[in-house]
Length: 382
Image (cartoon, rainbow, N blue to C red; front, side, top):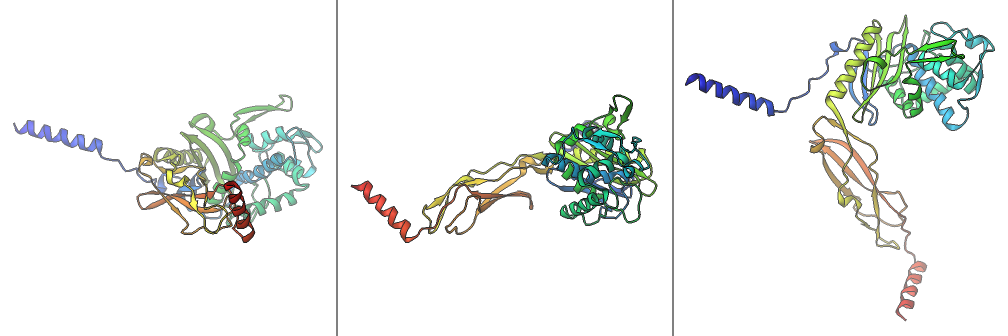
């Protein structure tokens, strides 16, 4: 009998364990074998893991993320086109490190130069593109550093556009995540970062992607690797699964194998523990709100709920939504004016807030407008 009772108790314990929630284990710094790292969810910008994230370090060819960002902006604005032919200067041809051996005066399309820069991390192609966009690398550098300031990259100073070791050329894992997030807003870049092998120069030059995760990691979409003597092995990796979009940054790893392993560990942690959900808009968020001293007593509203909410896996159903409006809205009211907000909470934490805005304008009532309104009313009564 005792054995039967013990067996029954054991089964009950197993059943209880199976229904209890399992708390995700935090990622330890020892699992990320690099001196500096960051994991960011790109849609929300939320940092999911960081290790010495603001430590200033050389970043090798990760520099090219900013170079590519400015080039993509030039393409989007129409300043340059993919079919434009770029002529190689003496300066661009003189770059060392990884390159495609451009010769002074050699011409190549922007499209092929981009392939060389992204896939093969070609330093000479990066400089040639920078000169084509801005006239000189020095001018392009000024734009790189200004863009870094605009993005809030407080740990970064660029001294060149390709990442070759140079005193004072530094960034941080956090800043790399910021510029990577900005670059991938230009989704055209994925046409290049997902290339494994490509031929240019009429098939005479073969490019092989330096990002080996393209062959081994599910959902990988990019982004850039880099290695120099001072920087060590670096990487910013982007990947997407089930609408979760992650940016994994590793700086200063001991070797390429360690860099890929660390980047993968970060991505694994993110995908295992986080999910993205679409916000539910409470009905009361769409109701008209009263307007004082207006030509209309109320104004229609609309909720700006574009975007996503990042939550721990399995917690999306626990989000609570609350709606609040300004205590008093006085005319004039302009279209798009913020009149309230939707607050999304998970437990005690506010995970997202959305604005509720006026759907149309409401002008202020005046003596003249009131008189015209009264006259219009009286005419209808006749």
